[in-house]
Amino acid sequence: MKTPSKRDVLISIRLPRALVQALDDYRRESEDLPTRPEAIRRCIEGQLQSAGYAVEKGEAPNV
Image (spheres, rainbow, N blue to C red):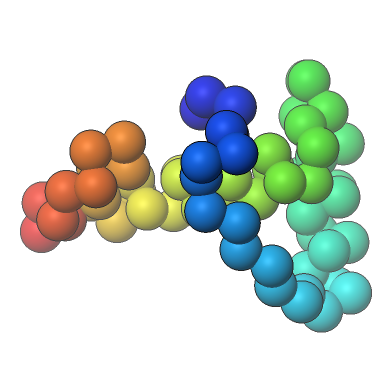
């Protein structure tokens, strides 16, 4: 995924500690040790793609 620009939408959320711990575990298992924001982007993108959404094009699911 490309690096976000200042024109992209900023979303702030609060997460339970257990979810942050799971996210950090995921990050440590990644070869490139992504930042937390990048890891969150990857998780969201992967989930959307697996549900049939074309993330880059913003298209409807293929279901």
